[in-house]
Image (cartoon, rainbow, N blue to C red; front, top):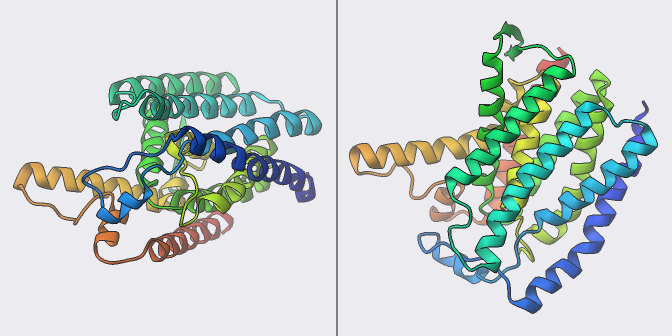
Length: 321
């Protein structure tokens, strides 16, 4: 398939997102539905209180519409595309419920961690079953080496989906950071999917990128709207799913290096405080540490995007070597 055929899905997703977002923002503003700011967070974030959130619902909806239309046009409705759509809807739905409870029901906690975990695990189990039915094998690509795992691979799939879903969610803490990171990540996997001629996966990646580019115009600092868990949980789950379906699982450790570092900073911070009573970072996830150190949000985003881009280019260099 020619790359030119992917321009239309990119354009549709972008156009739907950028054209419908103003109405979405306007509705939230008129109803005074906005983001609550954590008390323990940087004090200058208090100015963001009341900013509309759940913007991820808009670019996810744009992606779904694009997948339906382009999937029919390009005749790409395969089990792979169905399972990717399932992960998008389920993980996005979990995030939507979490955001909905916080914003509309005025409950700061939203869904409990256990409730979200159960939903994410169910998604992983269903994904794995369809993965096997579609003829895939229980083989892990570990830094270029094929490692047969039998049904233990199913446990890996669940951990991968749950882990990266939460990792991207942790990274979503300053204006525009995740929308930029995810654009780089899905763009990188789009190149791999095109090379492998997995055009169903390519369609998903391109549609997400189009939506994210449209969303970024409203999400960069100063953000007119935040992504919310509805967007970040879905993006993380989809990245994990794409890496598995392309049989390039290891690449997500490099392409998703920033997500890994963000998660590691939280784990280290909690472990250090519980064991020694001392904190390693001024605040975690690590992007807040740099904020507390005096870095601007634009500087953090720029450097994190640059690191992500370099890591992605290195990954592609290894992949094509």
